[in-house]
Image (cartoon, rainbow, N blue to C red; front, top):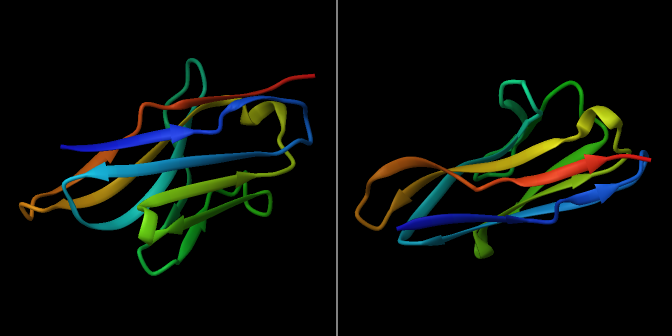
Length: 120
Protein backbone atom coordinates (compact mmCIF):
# COMPACT_ATOMS: atom_id res chain seq x y z
CA UNK A 1 0.00 0.00 0.00
CA UNK A 2 1.09 3.54 -0.76
CA UNK A 3 -0.19 6.63 1.00
CA UNK A 4 0.27 10.37 0.41
CA UNK A 5 -0.42 12.61 3.39
CA UNK A 6 -0.63 16.37 3.01
CA UNK A 7 -0.29 19.04 5.67
CA UNK A 8 0.16 22.78 5.99
CA UNK A 9 -3.10 24.24 4.75
CA UNK A 10 -5.04 26.87 6.64
CA UNK A 11 -6.45 30.37 6.72
CA UNK A 12 -4.22 33.23 5.66
CA UNK A 13 -4.65 36.90 4.80
CA UNK A 14 -3.99 38.21 1.30
CA UNK A 15 -0.28 38.64 0.76
CA UNK A 16 0.54 35.97 3.31
CA UNK A 17 2.42 32.71 2.96
CA UNK A 18 1.85 29.03 3.56
CA UNK A 19 4.00 25.96 3.07
CA UNK A 20 2.32 22.71 2.08
CA UNK A 21 3.96 19.34 2.57
CA UNK A 22 3.10 15.94 1.14
CA UNK A 23 4.85 12.80 2.35
CA UNK A 24 4.64 9.49 0.52
CA UNK A 25 4.97 6.24 2.45
CA UNK A 26 4.46 2.53 1.99
CA UNK A 27 5.84 -0.05 -0.41
CA UNK A 28 7.74 2.45 -2.55
CA UNK A 29 10.52 1.44 -4.92
CA UNK A 30 10.89 4.80 -6.66
CA UNK A 31 9.05 8.07 -7.22
CA UNK A 32 9.12 9.86 -10.56
CA UNK A 33 7.19 13.11 -11.00
CA UNK A 34 5.41 14.79 -8.12
CA UNK A 35 2.98 17.65 -8.28
CA UNK A 36 0.40 19.90 -6.70
CA UNK A 37 -3.11 20.54 -8.02
CA UNK A 38 -5.90 22.76 -6.74
CA UNK A 39 -9.66 22.60 -6.96
CA UNK A 40 -11.94 25.48 -6.07
CA UNK A 41 -15.66 24.90 -5.39
CA UNK A 42 -17.54 24.32 -8.63
CA UNK A 43 -14.37 24.15 -10.70
CA UNK A 44 -12.25 21.38 -12.16
CA UNK A 45 -9.00 20.29 -10.55
CA UNK A 46 -6.11 22.09 -12.21
CA UNK A 47 -2.35 21.87 -12.21
CA UNK A 48 -0.39 24.19 -9.94
CA UNK A 49 3.19 22.92 -10.18
CA UNK A 50 5.22 19.82 -10.91
CA UNK A 51 8.74 18.63 -10.13
CA UNK A 52 10.61 15.73 -11.71
CA UNK A 53 12.84 13.31 -9.86
CA UNK A 54 15.77 15.32 -11.17
CA UNK A 55 14.41 18.57 -9.82
CA UNK A 56 13.06 20.20 -12.97
CA UNK A 57 9.98 22.30 -12.23
CA UNK A 58 6.99 23.68 -14.08
CA UNK A 59 4.28 26.10 -12.93
CA UNK A 60 0.86 27.32 -13.91
CA UNK A 61 1.06 30.86 -15.21
CA UNK A 62 -1.14 32.11 -12.37
CA UNK A 63 1.36 31.09 -9.68
CA UNK A 64 4.70 31.58 -11.42
CA UNK A 65 6.91 33.83 -9.36
CA UNK A 66 4.80 33.38 -6.22
CA UNK A 67 4.85 29.63 -5.57
CA UNK A 68 7.87 27.32 -5.39
CA UNK A 69 7.72 23.54 -5.61
CA UNK A 70 10.54 21.42 -4.22
CA UNK A 71 11.13 17.87 -3.07
CA UNK A 72 13.27 15.91 -0.68
CA UNK A 73 13.89 12.54 -2.30
CA UNK A 74 15.36 11.07 0.87
CA UNK A 75 12.10 11.79 2.68
CA UNK A 76 9.76 11.04 -0.27
CA UNK A 77 8.27 14.46 0.33
CA UNK A 78 7.18 17.29 -1.95
CA UNK A 79 6.63 20.87 -0.78
CA UNK A 80 4.79 23.89 -2.09
CA UNK A 81 5.91 27.26 -0.75
CA UNK A 82 3.10 29.72 -1.40
CA UNK A 83 3.92 33.42 -1.14
CA UNK A 84 1.90 36.48 -2.05
CA UNK A 85 -1.35 34.59 -1.64
CA UNK A 86 -4.44 36.02 -3.34
CA UNK A 87 -8.17 35.50 -2.85
CA UNK A 88 -8.16 33.46 -6.07
CA UNK A 89 -5.76 30.93 -4.56
CA UNK A 90 -8.48 29.71 -2.21
CA UNK A 91 -8.99 26.02 -2.98
CA UNK A 92 -8.37 22.49 -1.83
CA UNK A 93 -4.80 21.53 -2.73
CA UNK A 94 -3.91 17.95 -3.67
CA UNK A 95 -0.52 16.40 -4.19
CA UNK A 96 0.13 13.51 -6.52
CA UNK A 97 3.05 11.28 -7.31
CA UNK A 98 4.04 8.76 -9.96
CA UNK A 99 5.20 5.82 -7.87
CA UNK A 100 6.69 2.46 -8.70
CA UNK A 101 6.01 0.01 -5.89
CA UNK A 102 8.35 -2.65 -4.60
CA UNK A 103 6.36 -5.08 -6.76
CA UNK A 104 7.40 -2.92 -9.76
CA UNK A 105 3.87 -1.69 -10.39
CA UNK A 106 3.55 1.90 -11.65
CA UNK A 107 0.63 4.05 -10.63
CA UNK A 108 -0.39 7.62 -9.83
CA UNK A 109 -1.37 8.29 -6.26
CA UNK A 110 -3.23 11.24 -4.76
CA UNK A 111 -3.31 12.78 -1.33
CA UNK A 112 -6.53 13.52 0.53
CA UNK A 113 -6.28 17.27 0.03
CA UNK A 114 -5.61 20.23 2.31
CA UNK A 115 -7.69 23.40 2.32
CA UNK A 116 -6.12 26.80 1.69
CA UNK A 117 -8.35 29.78 2.37
CA UNK A 118 -7.23 33.33 1.65
CA UNK A 119 -9.44 35.82 3.44
CA UNK A 120 -9.19 39.20 5.14
